[in-house]
Image (cartoon, rainbow, N blue to C red; front, top):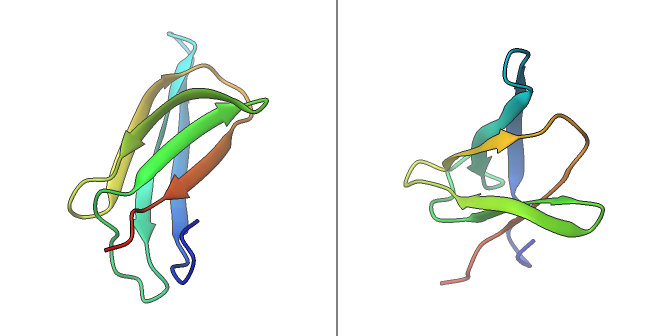
Length: 80
């Protein structure tokens, strides 16, 4: 996380039974509830990078497909 900026992660993990894959989606906001555009969202499993995405202008992101399981999610933003 970027120093001085506390990012809150709202995520939804949806698993689709038919395809055995899921989606990680949510919105990144700062401590004031404002969206954080163009933040990097990285998904790791066992310390290994699986995939990632960048938030849109409104702070939303979606990462799919993901196999069911437990993941570590890291969020970072480049300071202005």
